[in-house]
Amino acid sequence: MKFFVEATKLAMNMERSKDFTRAFNAYQKSLSLTSNETTIIKIQSRQAWCLHQVGNPLETERIYQSLLEKFPNNPWASILYAKYWIKTRRWKAARSLLSQASTLFPNNLELYLTHASLMKDMERSNEAIEILKKALAQESLTKGRGINRKDIWAELGSLFFQRGDYNSSISSLKKSLLMDEEENFLHYDILGICYLLVGDHENCIHYIDKYINYNGEIDTEILKIKARAHARAGVYHLATASILQAYALEDRLNLDAEDMIDLAPLKQLGFLETLENLEIEE
Image (cartoon, rainbow, N blue to C red; front, side, top):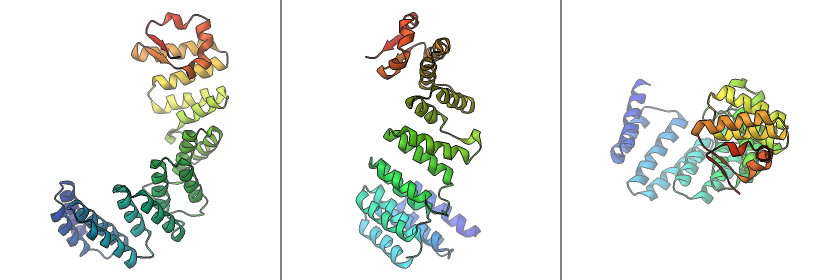
C-alpha cells in the first residue's frame, strides 16, 4: 500500500506539472501495485487524460471504451468517461452515457450528482431537478464527494430558487435543515429571501437573523432583505436601522426597483433623503 501511494503521488505531481508523458508511465507503475477495480479505473482514466493532453484523443477514447467493456458492473467507468466528455464539451454524449448508467446503477449518488451538474451547466434546471428527485427517491445511495441526502435537498432548494419556485425551495431547504445541526446549514439566506418573496415577513426575518448569527458576516444585500421584511411588517424604525447598517458598510447604498416596492414608505417618511450617497434605480 505504501509503495502504491508513493507511486501515485509521484504520477499526480508529474501530471500537475504538465509532464504528461512521464505521468502516464508513472501511473503504469501504480497500476502494477493495485488490484482494486475502482482504483484501476481511476488510474487508467488519468492515463487517458494524459494521452488527450499530448494530442492523442483516439487512444484516450480507446482506453475509456475498454474500461466500459472490462468493468461493466462498475459505475466509475461510466462516470469518468462522462466527465471526460464534459471536459471536452461533448455534453450530449455525456448526458446520454449518464442517463444509461443511472438506469444500470440506480443507487450511485455520484452519477446523479454529475448528471444534475451537467444539466445545470447546460441551463436545463428542470432536468437537473428531476435527476435529484430521482436520486432522493432511492432507498439507499452510495456516498459521493462526501455529500449526503441533506446536501441533495439543499441543492434541490437552490435549483427551485433559481427557477422562481419559492415554495418548493422552502420545502426542500427545510428538509435539508432538519437533517443536520442548525449551525451547519448554509442556506439561511436563501430561505429568508424565499419567505420574503412569498409574503411571510416574520419567517424572513427569523431566517435572516439565523444567517447573520451563524455566518458571522453581514453584507449589504442581506441587510436590504431584512429592511424590506421589517417595512412589510410596518415596523419602520427597524427597517431604517437595517438600512443604516447596510449604508455604513460602504458609506453608500444602491436600492433597485424591487427594493423600493417594500421600502417606498421610508421614502415617504423622508428617511431616504437623509442618506447622502444613496442611488435609487428606476
